[in-house]
Image 1 (cartoon, rainbow, N blue to C red):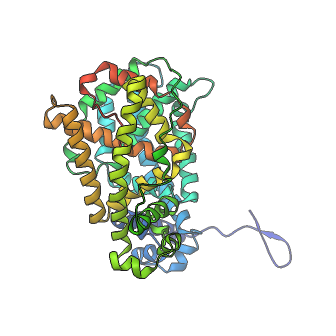
Image 2 (image 1 turned 180 degrees about the vertical axis):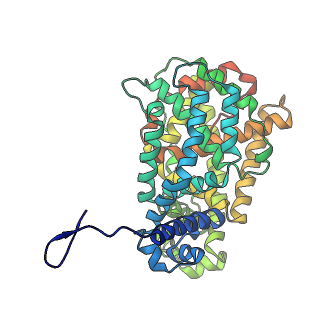
Image 3 (image 1 turned 90 degrees about the vertical axis):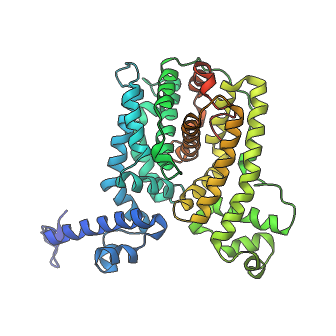
Length: 419
């Protein structure tokens, strides 16, 4: 576009200097480094400028907000790297030419996400942040849908059954990326799990009409049994983080929602993170049993394969956005906060004990691999709806039924998704 002189005649816009392009690069590299080293919440104009050795103005001149800087980092490095990994997973498990799944190739592709490079770690941070950042979410959703739409969105040449297979595979891929910090994750051998999925994709079930049974406990209304003033405080913290994210949560709104005072809050908890940890523990104890009991009840009615499909639908449906947001924040904050990670680890240990009791024939290595895969599916199911909001309509029984039928002895009796 031409510029205009004061006399009104057009003149060519001055070309940007090599120094300007070098500064662009410095800002992007600094933003990437801050996210990698300290997480999304640490990213700010000041932090980026300090890391790059530049003025805040140099950052502000290039990016309208931290959200836009995050989009730039995504588009520059993290997004393309994730795209390579996801395309490899999809090509191995659901080849575009219609050929059979390549389980060995799938294992390599899934493992690249389960043991991610730095660029994939940054991509995971941005995916998690996007759940509560509309600018970032729109950019990432646009990219993911463009990259994977042919496999994950029903269209003229893509049936809803094939799309369900694609989303199931995507959930596993992104879930493994989110689960890489779990204790022992780097040593988990996923060969059996990927082989199992490959066989299920090769032998899809016919879609069935699923029962209209909503998992109302996933709505977070209420987020747990509120018995006294303390429970009310924990419930308010759960809902505040679910609605606004941890960084956006304010103690003023929490105390206002419970008609309590900050003095009462601080008499119990020294910091915001301590309150969130306590609220997470309180919610997890309720949520795990509610989810387990609900799955058992559905399974008794329709069988475990269809029950698993109902669980997938419930995890993904729009009405449960708050619950998913809370779960993503619990994982994301756990990446940086040892107190939160301890709570997450304790919850998973309880799930592991339940799985071991239900599958006494499994050795420890097999049990840990199944546990890791199962938890990854849960993480992925909480994340994917932010970018594929209509995924809940897909017939996931085309995958869940053969997953149960083909190797029932290898499948945890409590179902694939756990709260």
